[in-house]
Amino acid sequence: MRTDSTPEARALLITGTVGAGKTSVAGAVGHLLTGAGIPNAVIDMDWLRRTWPAPADDRFNFALLLRNLRCMVGNYLDAGVTRLVLAGVVEDVEDRKQCGEAVGVGLSVCRLLVELPVVRQRLTRRHADEPEALRWHLDRSGELDGILDRARVEDFTVEATGRSVDQAAAAVLEAVGWR
Image (cartoon, rainbow, N blue to C red; front, side, top):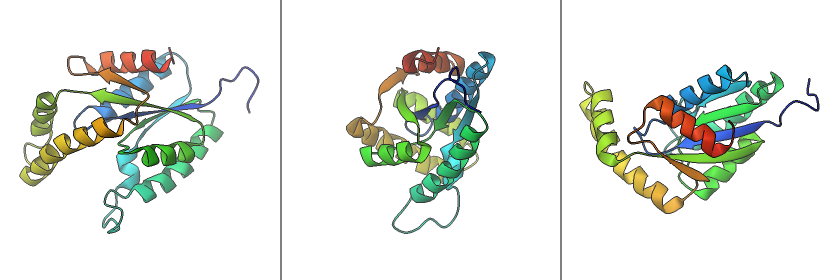
């Protein structure tokens, strides 16, 4: 039950290219919020779209992601969550708008900035035993970084190249004003 002293629910989407650390930083943001006693939920949006095959006209299953996100967010808000932390990619203003509509509360978007050589090192470690996946992710990292540069869907950025996951999470919380 909501009282006058209950803070208004808000959502934060952490975006960036593949290998930027979106999921890791979102998890760390969730831990910081938990430590501060703030009811929160962390959602890795990749899992909400993960099915095969994807429709021919929706390469990354974005429509399914949005349907699943609507359901999950409603459940979390009903359970008393006041801070939703999402990790995922929004490639354009329309994707951002649809994510905002799906969460139904104020949405801020943070783009993690990581230098591409560092991203490529991370991806090489992550996909060391998956040569096809590694090739795809290496190609996608530069492509997606360019898409995000042009789209400018974020409200703010956090430089994460030289930061630990915990340092990046603290910087994200500071930038969004949730500290």
